[in-house]
Image 1 (cartoon, rainbow, N blue to C red):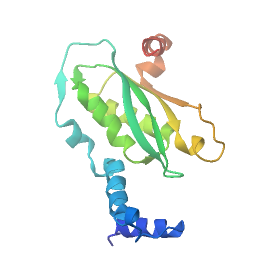
Image 2 (cartoon, rainbow, N blue to C red; image 1 turned 120 degrees about the vertical axis):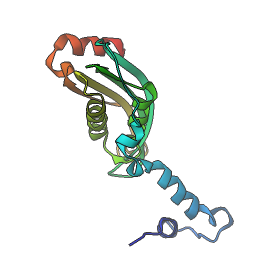
Image 3 (cartoon, rainbow, N blue to C red; image 1 turned 90 degrees about the vertical axis):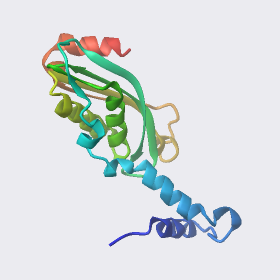
Length: 183
């Protein structure tokens, strides 16, 4: 069964007491549906297709870090945005991944209904799967509109999450090096 999202947004707008026939709102249900499809486009993406073979042989065995990858996601509890930055590192094990693919992996998982804790883990596990690295570390900081715009209303709060796999979990020195380099 196909759901007409524009019709759903029409019900939401009507539900808050607005008239969807009002000039400024006539096309809003369709625009909102298109925006929501875009914001959740990660569901239609596949990791292997996204990486598209951009994993290359390499003798490098030193930590690779991509810092400050901005992301936008939607909280699965309130459908409100959370916005932040990801820092992703891996220790190659005979393979490296194209630089832009790491940012694309972050985007693919961020563009789903999420909680930040799961997003962090999904990115780490995806990078590990495609690179077969000796270790992967992902650290994310984000500001959550569900905490800022409603409820407790804390404007300056920020959430930080991290996932350490392989060498980053097993070696305190490796973990410390990563954490120092992303500061």
